[in-house]
Amino acid sequence: MKIPFMTWRSTHSAFAWEVPQTFNFGRDVVDDWARRRPQSLCLVWQNDKGTERRFTWAEMSALTDRFASALAAAGIAKGDRVIVMLPRIPEWHIAMVGCAKIGAIPIPCIEMLTEKDVAYRVDHAGAVGAITTRAATAKFADAARLKLRIAVDGAPGWDDFAGALEADATGFSCDDTSSEDPAIIYYTSGSTGLPKGVTHAARGLYAWRVSGWYWQDFRETDRVWCTADTGWSKAGTSILFAPWTCGSCVYFFDGRFEPKDRLRRITENAITVFCAAATEFRHLINEDLEACDLSCVRLTVSAGESVNPDVVTRWQAATGCKLIEAYGQTETLMTVANHEHMAIRLGSMGRPLPGTVVAILDERHHPVPPGVVGQLAIRLPNPQMMLGYWREPERTAATIIRHEGHDYFLTGDQARMDEDGYLFYEGRTDDIISSAGYRIGPMEVENAIVEHPGVLEAAAVAAPDAERGEIVKAYVVLKAGVSPTDALAAEIQEHVKRSTAPYKYPRAIAFVATLPKTATGKVLRRVLKAEAYAAARSGPRTT
Image (tube, rainbow, N blue to C red; front, side, top):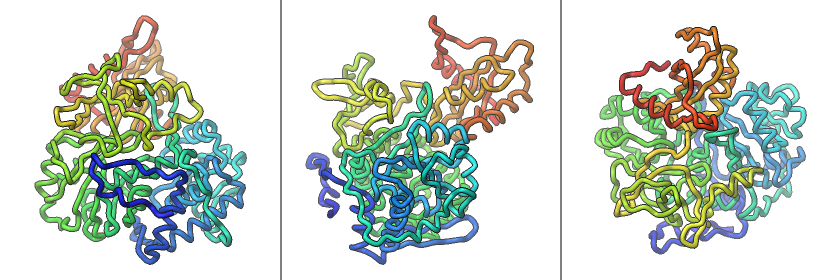
């Protein structure tokens, strides 16, 4: 099937979704480019040890055919869920596309997950396979129940990834995936309970090209670098689905963040579109940018957290390159964005992308006037919208309301819209903590804290932080006879790091006698959050 690129430069008014009845990303994008531009590069990978690997479209098409054949030989079938927990290495692309080719459903996960985090995802999704590194296999305590176990560099009881790439792909053909078939699951934190399994259909993988067209402006001649973690939905759109749909070559780097090294690699690898979280740009602007030759970059973009207008101004003044933002959620991916062909308003996350209609609603779901803050809602149907939360129909239904004859998805985000349709983010309606691009649910942190033997109760909220945007601050009630000390605070922090993903630990801890609660005993996190923001003005200590 030929990808309908005729909508690429469509105007907003002329835009119309052209979602096909069937769509398989492996067949209709990777294999299609392999036929059209077989010797062009699709992936350049480097690590901080000096190793480099390059892949053409033809090579990627063949490798993913063989990997898909290995999955099928292991008994993985259409609709089966497979955990893909890999670092920034080419095997991630191969695994993701290989799953797509047979209609399996990958569940991308960040490496920092603990054994408990992994077990929850395996059980909740009913996963029957796992693809990970040798070091991470220890996190799959109940691996024997999985019929597929593949590890990079192999491991006892696990098949070697390299061996899977030797599978016989003779006669292999991709699944003719329906656009409504489940195609990927991302787990994301909620304000209460355990993480949600956000399930997207194949139409989502197709529709995410719109942000690539209008926001990131991807082209066949581009070399794209997005620094997102492989477990983030942002990686799906900016490291795989959107750039490869547009024929762009992806640059993939496995190594620690170091500002000078980031800038050097941009230059040496002729990066044309650079995408990073606001946290990275806060570091990059403090380097001697004028001494760097960044002339290869024609566009820089950011998402996941707001970039301070001062950072945008300084970056653009020093580099001469625009830094434009977009807004999206795991449930929808990018739906609001700035782009090069519209006037940019500092502080705004842009306007709805073509094909997306939004409304700003009050608590009774009535529209509010321009300039008034309300909840951002997205009109349905929209092919970018998730199918729902995996095995949680009631939770899914709770996000949908009827407004003026249309169904709308309630984002849970507060925003305001000016007279010209520009949207400005105003925060969450729930208690999600957004720290350096990570979404952290307070319940996950609180559950880890109260496992400490000295803790009676705990509440986790967001506190402002100049570098990360927000950090986790915990208000902790100790058990009788336990004294609040700096040493105990550090002990609790280390306990949380061991109990859940390390990035979730509370960087600030306040010991309190009681927690504010409603009459029914629900903790009033909004009261604590307001206190945390007030305390930050006097300079809280974080570690």
